[in-house]
Length: 250
Ligand code: PGA
Image (cartoon, rainbow, N blue to C red; front, side):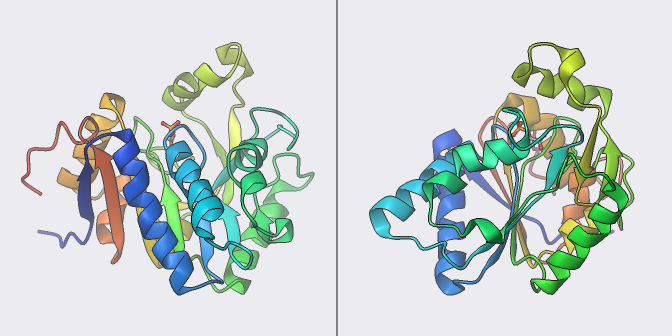
């Protein structure tokens, strides 16, 4: 038997999931103005970012001293490429809040020396005092960031190869599947597990199998998100569809 710390909140729908996540993030930012926030890209956190932008504009939620470390970036895409994660984050979030651009860190997909870049990224996270709150999505195969099934539990920021499933899942953002980059720079599972608090978001039927395995299966590198069971302060916020294959036995 293993001890499971992972908590689950089932939200009514995507908007409810986004609001619930935003209220936790906002509370953490209010508690600690210098919060180090780890952020994710993808369709899932878009509603969270919209809600945080609203809170900034209407309620004065202050990001001026917050530091950001993003999870990942495609190798080969410049920050100006409209499918780069750098572009995504500025377009969908950072351009609309009062974050100081010098406090935004996103892996550099055009780095000439990716291995050195990855080492520096880990060092910068440590020098910032470690990640206080990490936001995660989940792949349909259970990946977190681009840590595909089989990624070592103690992995650090590194260059990784995308799985065939992830390339297929992400092809919807590109003109055709061949344009999806095959590699990315990704924080490792070990990097993510060092965050003091983690919120994993999941929405839609496409994530239901991965969420069931994450919560109800054994913690295994074959379902990277299931390793969050060993984290002391991790919460999954799943909408009803993403939670639809849970049996309640965890
Ligand atoms: P999605 O991606 O939010 O676009 O579904 C999640 C992920 O692959 O981690």
